[in-house]
Amino acid sequence: MAVQINPSILSADFARLAEEAKAVEGADWLHVDVMDNHFVPNLTLGVPIVEALARATDTPLDCHLMIEDADRWAPQYVEAGAGSVTFHAEAAAAPVRLAREIRAKGPVPPWRSSPRRPSSRTRTCCPSSTCC
Image (cartoon, rainbow, N blue to C red):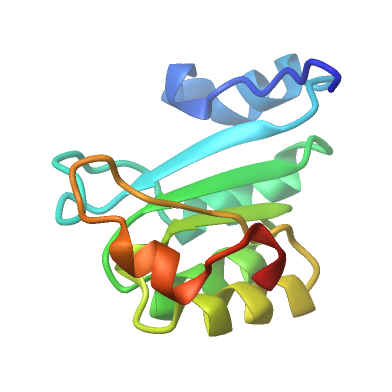
């Protein structure tokens, strides 16, 4: 497996966000951590910032959603221009359906399971990585 370079936009100077995104063009992905201060205890970027980043750079955006109600929000990140949308299975009411919906729109829809949350739901809804 080849090494990929995926710098995180959270390391950027937010006063110069477009410049910072352009500075890392050539990277495989630009990683965007989205946190809602409910699913995880931090608040970061939302859909409008992803839309702006998608306009500012040719580097594909890898959006990692650490949010509640992934069913509602994940499709909006796809529409905003994300090339990859990762969500936590336990944050979606129907994770398999959501993964298929995201994939049908083009982006790669992997999901993650939080180490502090039970993983049985993830195993139940997606026993193998081929389901989505």
